[in-house]
Image (cartoon, rainbow, N blue to C red):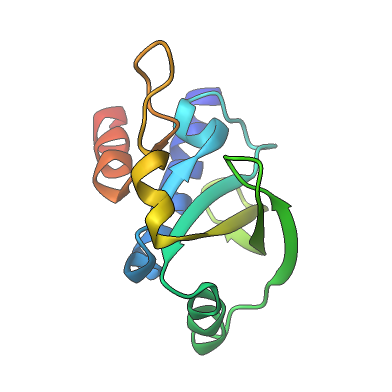
Amino acid sequence: TQPFELLALRRLALGWMERLVAFRPHLGGAVWRGTATRLSDIHIQLFCDDSKQAELALLDQGVRFEVRAVNGFRGESVDALSIHSHCAELNEDIGVHLMVYDHDDLRGALLPDKHGKTWRGDMAAVRQLVDNAL
């Protein structure tokens, strides 16, 4: 069911966020907003002083990734580090995309939309969503 798939994706996202905690990870997209299914990718935004730090951290962890440029949340070009990560609960590989932003971009990233909902959430917020689903 969609709620089960969403919970599995949020747990997988939380695992990646914990691995990359030094880069102030925030979950966005359908997995954050609650509309994701097993066909959805995970989108995590990282906020660092130096964009290469995130790449080095992944290399240090033995993670294979592809780098490409994508449009950021303000329309600017940002690096996206794309990973295939196995989700045991869904028994399939899921695309995890890490968008790397400058640390200063974090302030504007937390503004809510016109309905008062945030576009992204930090580890504590994601953990709360996971805990509330159980």
